[in-house]
Length: 282
Picture: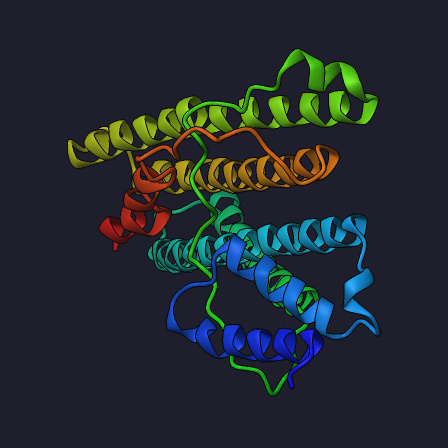
């Protein structure tokens, strides 16, 4: 006869084997973590609700950090490619006598900085993934898993809490205020900051094609774009972390969420990566 602990072990093993079939979702990660956590308790039957909440919240945080780090590392690689192209173009123009020593140094410095940032981003992504693996209770012998390319989209609207929930506990009020602030910041980046940088890039490209702007104007703009996209990823990460904190403060229950925004948050910026502009100056 199988015990409850044996059933948990079997269910956890089945979940682990299913992980490579598709990109890991947040709920999938939480389910694996809870099954593995119960399986490793001496007496799973006495596992407290608080313990379950902590396991779920810690796994959600690790998941958000891991996906955000992967997304940031992917974009850092695109920026580094662009910086390498810009540095090579600057080298050629400097050798031909068409580029000042100051401007040449700026492009080389940007390339050097982007290489360091890429190395840092990749290390952060590796560490975040390992943290998620530990949070889910997986071992080296378990099946590997694939993370999504980017974080979930920002919901169309914020969650609305009943006044009674806000009046009940100070922790809930603080968590909800943090949640609202981080939602508004991420929405501001998505709806205002990133599109404005995209519009600037589009206008500069038109000017460049009409010989009214230089390739180095595009290179300078690419640095601004990189900063804006990086800040948006960070803002989106902070929103999902804030929602996790709110969910934990509410005892694991959230009001029915609004639907996710159907428009991918980085669709515009992915079409306007720095490399797509600098390549025209080769």
